[in-house]
Length: 236
Length: 84
Image 1 (cartoon, one colour):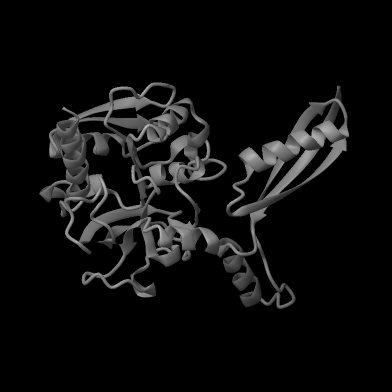
Image 2 (cartoon, chains in turn purple, blue):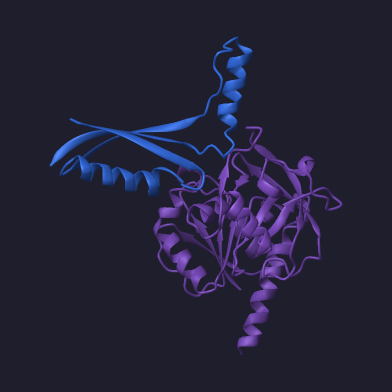
C-alpha cells in the first residue's frame, strides 16, 4: 500500500503519521507538499494533525484553498481513500468533503488526553478490522473539536449512518459525561456517504505502538490495509 | 477605478454555541455589570479595495465574505463600506 501524508505549513503530526504507516504498519508512506498537485499512484491520502497555516481565519481554512487540496478532492471523487486526523478533519470540513464544522470546545480548554470512542460501523474501509461496537482508546489534542451541524444535516448524517466513532465510556455507553468537547451527538469521527472519506478528531497514529500506551489506532490503519489489499486481489 | 475602505464583521449564527461570548458575558455579570444582558464574540476585518463603483465593490465584498472570510455553516457576516 502507498500512502501520501500531506504536509501543510504548520502540520505537526506528519512525521508521527508517516512513522505509523511506514514502521508500525510496515507499508510505504511518502510526504506530499501542499504545493504539489498530483496524488496519482496512492491508495490512501492522510491529512495529518497540526495547525495548518497557523489555523488563521478558521481551523483548516487556508489548507482548504491550497493547491494539493484540489488534488485531494479529485482523488476522493475517483474513490480514493482519504483520512483526515484532527486538523486534517477540520480541513475536510472546510473544503466540503465532509458535512458540518468545528467550533471551540464547549469548556474553552485545549484537551490533550486519551479518550474512548465507540466504533459505530465495521463495514467501512477504515473499520473492517474492528469488532462491532468496539471501544478504542486513542488520544485527542485539540481546542476546536466541538462538532457542529444544523439539525437537518445531523438528521441526514444519522439516517445515513455516517457517524463512524462516538465518544463513549469503556462499556460503549454514550452520554453527555463521555463527551469531552461538546460535539453534537458525541461525534468523534465521520464518514462521507460514499464511504471513502473519513475525518476523526482522535489521533490513531499516537496509539500505534505499545510504547505509546495503546495500539488501538492500528485497528484503523490495518483496516485500510486490508481493504486496499482485498481490492487489489479482486482487481487482478 | 475608485478606492474603498470596508469593515467586514463575522460572527457565529444564533444557533451555534459561542463559548467565548458566554464566558465574557458571565464574567461581566460577576464583575457587577448586570445591565449587559448578552455577549456574542466575533471577528472584524478591515479591507481596502478598488472597484468601478460602489455596487461592484459590494459584489466583491459579498463574494469574499461568503467564500473566504466566513464559514456559512456556522457564521454570518455584515459589511460597511466607504469611498476613500
